[in-house]
Image (cartoon, rainbow over all chains, first blue to last red; front, side, top):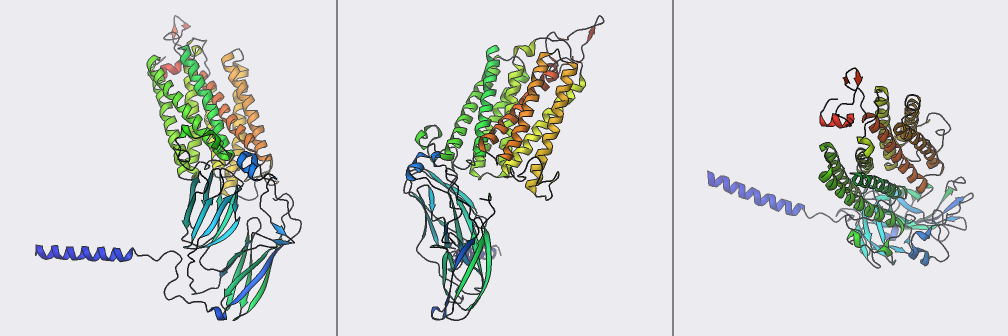
Length: 259
Length: 326
């Protein structure tokens, strides 16, 4: 009787161990489930457009670079905050993304990392997107110290020092988050905003506020445009097979003194 | 003993400097500019190269170095007091100060490692003021004047008022620290009205804390006015009471002005820090007055129909703390 109990206990232990081993093989973050629908690129369409701004845009205030002589030396003509980057009426550094409507589609996570550089005592780029599960490489190209302080909600908050030039850290985010702010507390003017997405349909406006979301399957989508100072605008777009649509978002400049 | 008193004053003054340095860290948003602790970017704290003291690091690292210095000064104060001070309660007080500064250092490190959770940061700010109070108390009770007999002070009302004022000032400092560490310094961005109204038309946690700090200021100013008026009316010949009462009035007026300027300047770091330091001075002055009021005999035993200081020159606080009745 005692031997039977011992055998049963041993069998249960082995089974539990096996179960825990198989359970520990979690899917990497962002990887699509095996039964996920795949986008047929031959039938996909595009959404392109522009983000504009109306009204008098406040001037970006100058940065007090003298807090770090190295930063001053890297910006001999001074530097300004990037609250509003406007080119010919188009607003840049706006994160445009499909917020809703993709249903059961699944998307492979890119293997190449996205780079966030600290260069000339500024984050480059200022606004960027990365996929859930994709590597984000945070590099210090400056010959001064930076601390990388990420203030995520869904992805947590952390703070890491980078004391030497060319050191880098890698991060992989597990959850979708729009937006995840980064800052440097050494140089308090340094801010970056990272959109962590679970699909590839996002873009940051450039060249006069232009953006493009390529290879979208037919469907009705909620598209958001996020700006660090002006908030979010939303539009709904219905896209047929192989169809291309133009979308324009227009933000209003804030009242004077709101910068 | 006079040198111990002078040294205790030095420790208290160093603590004012330390509170100022800490104030600059919070006011400039530099609390996380050095992400590690107790090291600094991997360097041993005291060997961190000066060439790397840039941006926010300058404030945070300076704060750490001053804190270490104050910690060392407090160790010396505790040992010195233990060796030369005959009163056991004063010796215990010196070691309480040492315990407080050690705990304060740990809280400082913890708040950096935990990314400035408000509860820990507020605790750090609150303990800083308590430690400052301990150093001020040590400076007062080791002073020669503390041991010199003075004429009796039969003023129970003043004892109550000064104690209440000190407690109110400390409470107000805690509310202010809460406001700073939850980022509510501009939750009400207008002064003196709140969004154009006497009472805020909308309420959030930040607005409520900010408004409580403004109301607290009114309460503290009223308490200080009452204290100063009482001292001036009843004890105008007592320089040891008139002096701190006048200073308290001066500091509290400066404090209210600085508080208004903090809002009007949109949290300008130097004004903001001056507000923090001046707040500590209000607390210290109120504490000195309280100690002097409580440290004097209130009822003297009557010998031969004449009130006589019992036990010679030992003030009442000494006797209370030693469990001796006067």
